[in-house]
Image (cartoon, rainbow, N blue to C red; front, side, top):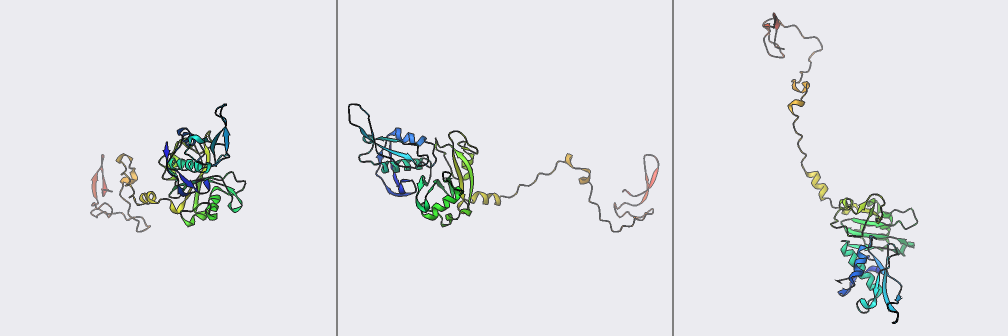
Length: 291
């Protein structure tokens, strides 16, 4: 399989500082790193290894790398299966770039960083202020967001926005993600929350992360559209649901607390507008209006 690999700053996937020529890497090696579950997908060079492949032949050199998140995954390949002269640093950069592209990260970083007294941080950035962050390996009370902001402040990571050094401008939600297959089509935090590869509680094969948003860069278009949409008109209540009070005309406000004067025959009722006169009942008659 041919890929175009990019160097990462410090060999940790923090950014691009050069382009390697197009190269061919063993498909089995690429498949192994694609299925590895640590979310940053960053690798660093590992110790040189000499392996016995054939008991009748001298030991063969193996170029290997290590996952910077877990430090326990060490993929590698015989030097004879790699491009001529490929070093551990070059292989780490190529694999990091491959996974970063597969998972649609703009950049990713992982491992131990020596600046500022040293700290552990794994982070991946989708763009538009959306991050995956894990700094839980540090034995301190600092949150994932605080360590991320510190990494920007110290220059370990290059902020897209200069305000990213302020931890108060972020929101964060703890989650557990399964990266054995890429989580596709991630544009917003809601895309991550809706993914079946994300869990709100610890699960087997899931890794702890904080889903972090840098609020000033979060797209506001969906919110603005929702705010601008006209409110739906409430449906009229069906006639069967109308109560007696809704069917009656509104009562006229009382002009006086004194009881109304009895009307005499021939006078006009001020409420119903009918003349006071003798009117029939089922049995007999009565003197009054139509009220």
